[in-house]
Length: 47
Image 1 (cartoon, rainbow, N blue to C red):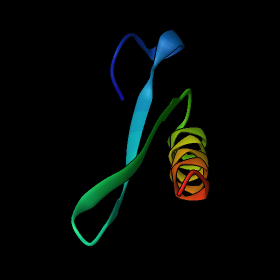
Image 2 (cartoon, helix red, strand yellow):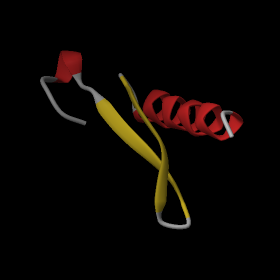
Image 3 (cartoon, one colour):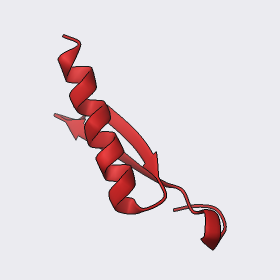
Image 4 (cartoon, one colour):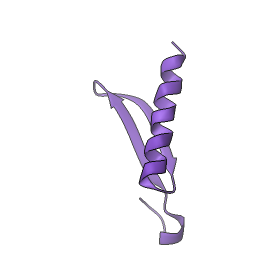
């Protein structure tokens, strides 16, 4: 995470076969991971 303790922002990425398929941010590691997973699923649904 980055920023002061009261306003930390975590970033997470989802990669499939080395290719970035989703990215997300959140106030906790778990929140960022969930946002990245959601982003990857939404991107997959567009094809």
